[in-house]
Length: 80
Image (tube, rainbow, N blue to C red; front, side, top):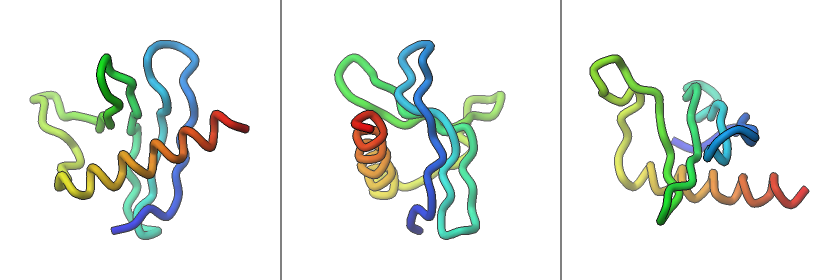
């Protein structure tokens, strides 16, 4: 799967760098995804069910790919 579009925007309140949706392969939409700046690293937070399970479980390699793409997107968005 590859990213078709990123529809994420900065959140002026709090420690969220970006919040929004990611479209994969023009078909799958990941809603309410957050790019968060932690104390030591940036990470992606996906929505969770009430029992704590992630709505969109993904592999580590795909997570790393998404994190890289969102980081690049964030840097491009903040330069403008």
